[in-house]
Length: 452
Ligand code: LLP
Image (cartoon, rainbow, N blue to C red; front, side, top):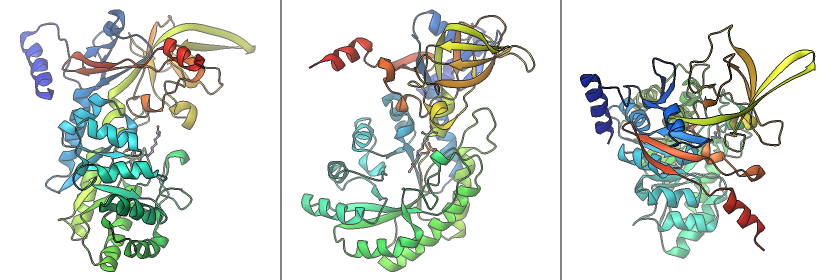
């Protein structure tokens, strides 16, 4: 499919025909300034009625390309990219990444079942999660012939629980211990996970207790060590610091348990450019890992990573329609709002983390600096935090906007708050709409809520 897309781009270029698609993956602008995704005109999709708003639109070719570039960063090192399904759990995305040789990192029984349903093999799935229910542990133990690649143990108390389930089902449990490396990641506090106060992982100081618990769990096999320091890392420093801790502890564990680990999992968190820049690419993180394992004489160990955002965020947008403009002079000075039909229920990141996404007119380039007007872009939800921040808009009215870099933690964190239907998702491939997911509409919500 990816090849077909490239062929079509090249064919269009060769014939001089009006290109359906440009050579750009992800978001770009055409000569008139209109927004494109994967070379497809978003405003044409809206005007043709192919996209009702608010809608997420994703470029599957770009997602595939991102996976290929990340994997290239590992060179000949044995590795597995376990895509963090929580970032974007849509079937077309999971299938596209499976096609590029990715496995999955899941955090619930439902995500695990979804990954398997989309064709990802159980031997390529790791299951993280601080409080897994017994029935979720059972799904992992029952998958495939020997369970999933690893259940990631996040606390010592989980070891006897997994042992009990394995014994009961007559299975062997493959586990890895997720170490909390005690590294303060330089990112938003809500998405830093590897510091001492976090609920995630086994603190490195408790490792010997984990080893004791493993000694007392005859149906549990330790196959790896993992860690994840946080999300949206825009430098490799913290990731490298945590990786060094993992490498050091791997040797301690192997000695104590007299067994060789199959893999080391260094987690996800590769950052993207939300507009303020990101000087490192996912492949840069991979290349550093290759270097670190070589320095530790562990070239033969399989290296895992768990990126979510970096594989999908830049390749998805949220398209919205302007409902109206509002002007008010609360203190004399004029304030202007752009009120759109997408709200915090569709894209929660700004309300939850103060995250900033670029919001631009769909049909024209954003005004150059010093021009246009500063508007607060807000949604219809009855909450003050339903506010996407201040953005520069043209002087003339804007009928539609595009919210950029919304391919990760967008739809997956959406809700039906205020009785709002979940947004539609559209998947582009080779310059065409390849798939769409239409969630239930408001009428179904009303029926369900009104039922006795
Ligand atoms: N592995 C583990 C164990 C994780 O906890 C996470 C993310 C990932 C991998 C993937 O991280 P990524 O590569 O996507 O940064 N909702 C937030 C992000 C929460 C991330 C939670 N854990 C946001 O919208 O920024």
